Length: 232
Image (cartoon, rainbow, N blue to C red; front, side, top):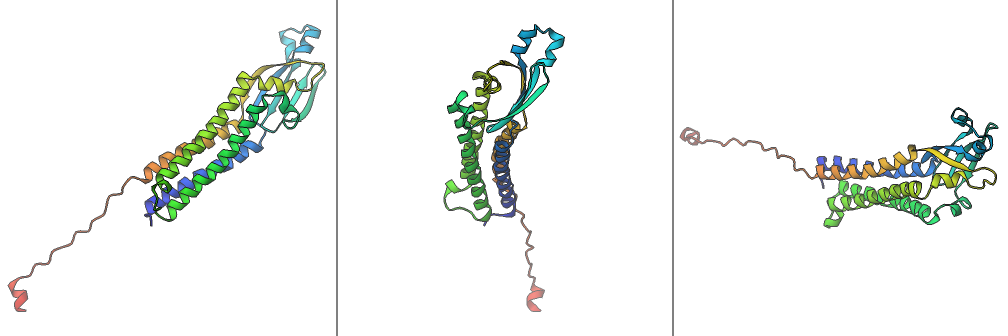
């Protein structure tokens, strides 16, 4: 049975793994991975708009891994429209990369639960096998954090190298063409970063749990027997 010191740190490790699990679910559900400003290039060309007038042709867009929203500004006021990534829009994107991001995040969910289970196991008892001990907790946290980091890097690659925002903005647009003038990562993206950070923090927690506590020794006074005590 592990001592109270290790139990406390293993309990914290299990909470961090569970928090990572929750964070990934939130990141998948909330459609705010990236937001941006989109310029209606067709409208600008038609009226030969100058710099002060460009504001009338700049709309907004935000999206996640499953859905999003854009506001078109083509000189006649804003028009808001909702869109979903599946089943049609994904065909206009790098479908393989987008599906890979989703698979990585679903895999990270499973790995986060496994790492939590290993932490709880070590909190309850001392495993007989070393692979189920602190080394196992570190292994599963490295895998989970690495998978989340790979999903984040894949999304960034999709944005930067595959013009993800521009492809989404121009989906099913026959009359107007939009160009991206500004992009920024939003809360769902940073929630995923926090999830990977939780697994990195778990490595520190497990390392701290292995620090040996100083043993408290009680001084035992030696009894001295004198001749008078024997006669007594």
